[in-house]
Image 1 (tube, one colour):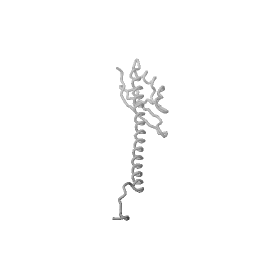
Image 2: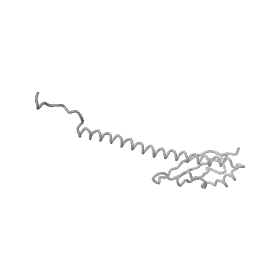
Image 3: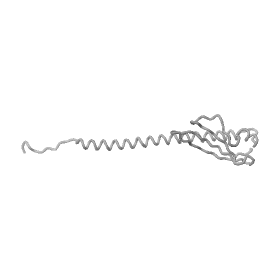
Image 4: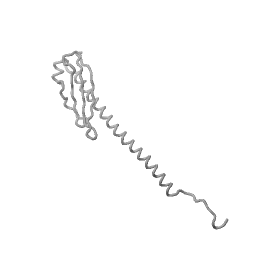
Length: 133
């Protein structure tokens, strides 16, 4: 063999390293994108849970009116009126609506509206029947 023999060199070429870095960069960017989306969805879900809990609290307060009758219910929670005292969410408003205030049981809908990320408006509603005990 002599001086001019071919030897195999060990290691990676610059092109191979660049291809691997490009692939790894794409995989990492994908994971970060999925993580960002999942955090946004988690925030929206958390806000929805808070809104439903606020609506349930209003309904529980309505059930505990003493004495429970239509006159007391409609005077304390007027049809189409908003309920004060809730600020758990950004620009939260809670509205109470009745299908018919003269009915027994009364069908009540509590609507919670708030501003989410990007000034998007979100809404949760609970509808139930209330009657004297």
